[in-house]
Amino acid sequence: MFYICIWNIFLLFGCAKTEMVSEDNTVTNEKFVSTTGTIAIETEATETESQDAIQPSTDQSSEAAPEYKIIMVGDILLHTPVEESCLQPDGSYDYDSLFSHTKEEIVAADLALVNQEVIIGGADLGISGYPCFNADYSLCDSLVGAGFDVICHATNHAMDKGRKGLINCAKYWKENYPQITVLGIHDTADTSTSCGAEPVILDLPDMKIAVLNYTYGTNGIPLPDDMPYAVDLLDEEQVAADIRRAEELADFTIVCPHWGTEYRLTPDASQEKWTKVFAENGADLVLGTHPHVIEPIEWVTDEERDHEMLVYYSLGNFVNWTSGTGEGVANRMVGGMAEVTITKNDHGEVEIADYGVKPIISHVTSGPEGVTTYFLEDYDAVLAEENEIISQDPDFSREYCVNLCDSVWGDLWKAE
Image (cartoon, rainbow, N blue to C red; front, side, top):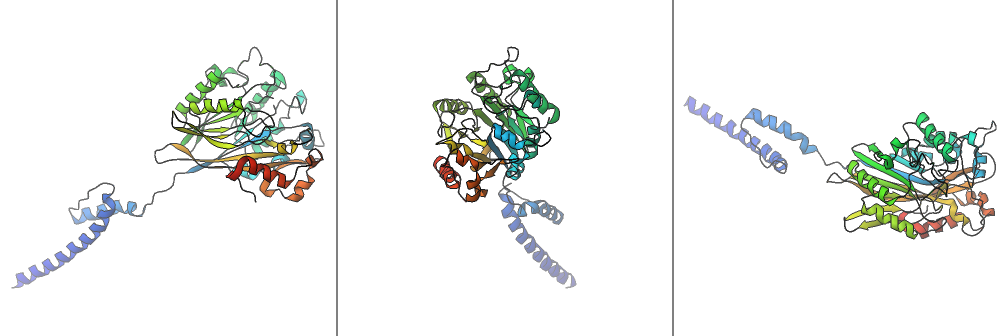
């Protein structure tokens, strides 16, 4: 009788324990089957180990892929009154004031590009405005201080100070800011893709970005005979080869062309031709400059490759004080900051997750540090009335700038 009682007690506790394991195992099993399909519990010790191993996935939620923000601004065009506004009492130059109201956004970007319209040949070659521009070396200091990572130098003004100006510019960048990526000009053959160099590839966390920069020409100034590689030109065979190679080396390819027709608010036939070349060879993003006014933003599809490419036809001027007068001059005071967010999709491919544009206004007044730039959202009617460009084009106003952005960019920006 004693042994019978002991046996019944054993059965009672054994059944209770079996039920507890069954309840735990059912919950765990439901979560685990979705990934492995099976689970086995052989002993009490195995049960504990299995639950410990499974537990992290019970609480884990799928995290969104990291996103990276790329920005680019248009032409830094230093007419004589802009240079004069940056001239210091001791004869040196300080360009920081040009970026004082936009620096925070530039610094915050994961990758910040700028079109440096003017060659930076140094004061020894003479600081000059239109038509043959040249800036002081301190502009490099201000560009870096403002937060730019990539300087696009392939413009029609790259040869304004000849061979010496280009070499001075490239050398100053190399010696003083080796961490900055300078595109479009070359003082030696070993950095030019036309001489066999690889396209520039930039590393962001877990992805590689290729950036290419070309200009349509150099205002008729020939490249040095012994430096045919000095400026990256829009040569179809070379451009196609560069993009294809970039696609092999990188996850995402950006092309920055200096192209189009000055003061035209819509793309011309040349831009349409080159857009097709870029798309057919696999470029992902085009950030255009040169027209000195803003132009539309659109997606372009290469149906044969089932490939989409985002095109900013022209970002206009970042800063300028043109000497022009009359209708349309006000258009040159409006530029744009391209804002493109990239990420990896579920297949591990880099794609554009979001994009837009932020309008920028060149604000010009006489006197030291009188030229600067503002985001349109920070630019009120009072500031607009102080802008001396009104004497050159009475149409200029904040409302004029808003209407221009509406007509060119539509819903891709919103007025504050």
